[in-house]
Image 1 (cartoon, rainbow, N blue to C red):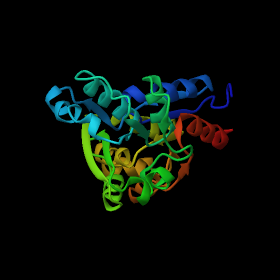
Image 2: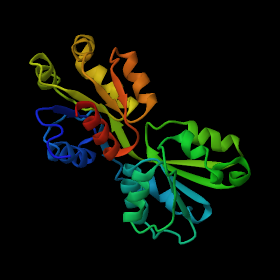
Image 3: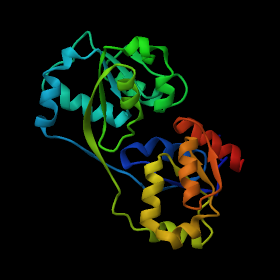
Length: 256
């Protein structure tokens, strides 16, 4: 892949802690990664938030982690109070979260092999009505997650509880460096990996900024994100599929 993105500047909008892998891959392919995070992740550190759930961990049949951040901050908060119950199964929204759980010592993780959204999770046999009815499910997530998974599991007869272990915020970002790249014809693509990120982009750059960005190709990881970008006039979207590898392949295929 060396040189495939030579001369290309790609704006990567992942949160700061999650942007490194994709930025390095772009640079290794000869491109320039311009970091412009559209989401700020702030972990919950108050033990009082975790203590009531930690005290009842043995009562849950399944703990579901909605993101790698949920794995990182949820496990840290719970494990500082007590060890993980050996009989409590873990599940993840996708392979990125599954790898994060594996790194924390969980050998068996229930997760989709393809896709990374609530719809894909709910299509797994282990989340069918007969499988979850009467089961207690803990959903570990941020404070602004989608409600579809919890609402559907509850409708299927599960007892659902949520643990919010981090806050998702719009960062205080200066749009000028990004828009200068556009004005000088030096921004070749924008990577947006959440619908919330698209909302934050619109808030940060404003209507005039969105108009400037409208000709720039936007690489997204899910059709739902593409639809949100279209709402803001960003019509040239390329859906890559899940994960940094898929985003990099899509970038190289487009520019190569």
